[in-house]
Structure formats: structure tokens, C-alpha cells
Image (tube, rainbow, N blue to C red; front, side, top):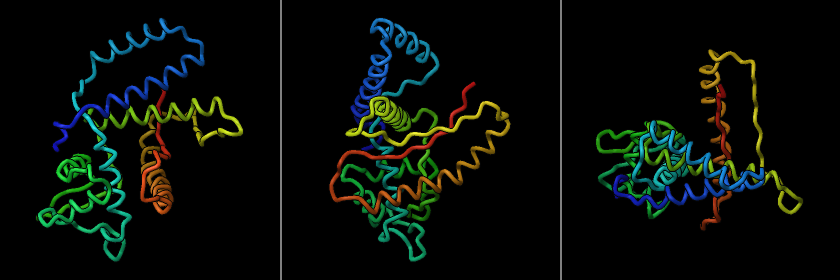
Length: 230
């Protein structure tokens, strides 16, 4: 199941969810439907001139990230000191890791994604974990699907919090903004977040993992991001 041969149904579903959330905010702001369509068409037209169009995508990025987490947290796939084991590809050890997360996780596709992101490498016939986080870029189809999903999820939190009530309490959402920080300090801030932000998210990931059930109940997540507004 190579990534380029996967269905694009996932990205269509993610896009529909994102546009639905945006439409709800527009309706809340009393934006006329014709005006919303006009703005979207203009923005899409401008973006399509400078953006690479992706034909295929899937939930592969989510599965690969889940596999990476399992590799670092499941004692079966870790050494006594807690570091991830080197998993034989030929003997099926890496495939076993993939199957432990999902029967839909094709080991070849997953290993390709982990290598592309720099999270793993192959040496002497074994898959070796290099880092815990999965970072895809350069308009990779899986990265685009992930960006769309995250956008919809973040907007859904904002929309829910606008109409929060006692029976539907607010979800956690906080932002730190500084309008006086010099641009040359952004690289240092990135380095700070790479260490402390990553550590915090790993703690949250571990906290949620020990509270998992054998069956799925939808998605619950915590995100962190840096923005620079010109």
C-alpha cells in the first residue's frame, strides 16, 4: 500500500470538516453566504497559483506518529533502559510494531514516512528510531492532510468555547502573544520550544496513553504551535 496509491478520501473528509467549521464561524459573525463564497473563491484562486496541488493522501501521517509513540512507550518494543529497540524488517519485528497500532498500518508506507521525516532510519536490515516526533514538510500529501485536520480541530475548539455552557464546558485554549519581541529572537524561541514544548507534549502523550481502552472513542488531543504575524 504505497502512499502514492492510497485513496484521497481522507483529505476530502478533512477538507469538508475544516470548511464546515469555518462556515459555522462565518454564520456566527453574520457573514452573508454570497460574501463568504466570494472571499473563499478569491483566496483559493490566489493560493492555487503558488501552491503544489496534491493528488493523494491518507491518514498515514497519523498512523506513523502513533507507531512512533508506541515504539517509544511500549516495553515490548523498548530496551531495558527505555530506549526504542532496533527492529528487524526481514524478521517482521517492524511489521509487528505497525500491527500493534492498526491493521491498516502498512509497514512499507510507515517506514517510508518515518524515514522521510527523519524520525527513523534503516541500518543493516533493521529499523532504528532516531527521534520521537514526526515532522513532514515540503507539501508532502500526508503533511497536507494533517494540516487540514489540525486546522479543523483547532477551529472546532474556538467555536465550542464561544458557545460554552454548564453542560458543554470550555476546552483548554490559551495563547501567549508579544508585539514587541524582535524578529531575530524567533530562532531562539524555536529552540526553546523544541526542548520544553516537546518535553511537555511527550508528558501529555504518556498521560493519555496509560488511560487508553482497547477500543476507539474518537480523538482527544492537545496541540502547541508558534505563529508569527507580520
